Amino acid sequence: MYFYIENDEFLVEAKQCWCKPELDFDSTIEEAFNSAEKQLTTLVGEDGQRTVVVFACPSIPDRGRDQARQLLDNWTSKAKEVNCTISCLITLDEFEHALYNGRYYPGIALFIRTI
Image 1 (cartoon, helix red, strand yellow):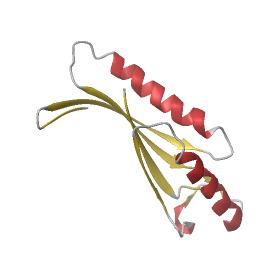
Image 2 (image 1 turned 90 degrees about the vertical axis):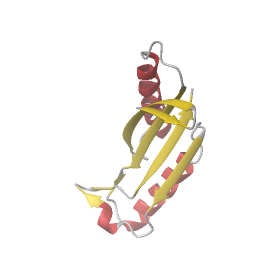
Image 3 (image 1 turned 45 degrees about the vertical axis):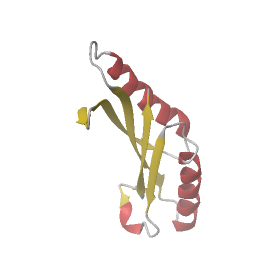
Image 4 (image 1 turned 180 degrees about the horizontal axis):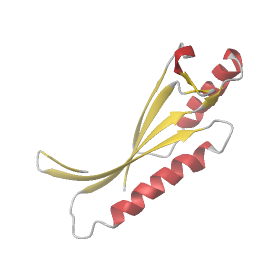
């Protein structure tokens, strides 16, 4: 994506991923960042601030409400430690309705990194 805002130019590549708290959260996010950064490097001759955006959704197994809540809390803690320029995290307090195919998807995180 290309944005021109008040004399500033931005080149943005966005990726999405689903992070399972029982797996390596950090590597999932870093793979998304690395993939987006690689694509931005292919833009030869383009000026502007290069920025990577990753949308990450927690993917939590349905093992009962209490365990799902604990896994979401763990996911949230890990999300707050991601190496990025800015982030935003939104989770649902009541996430029973976020169940699909045996997993909860109770929120979203947005990570932005300038390179």
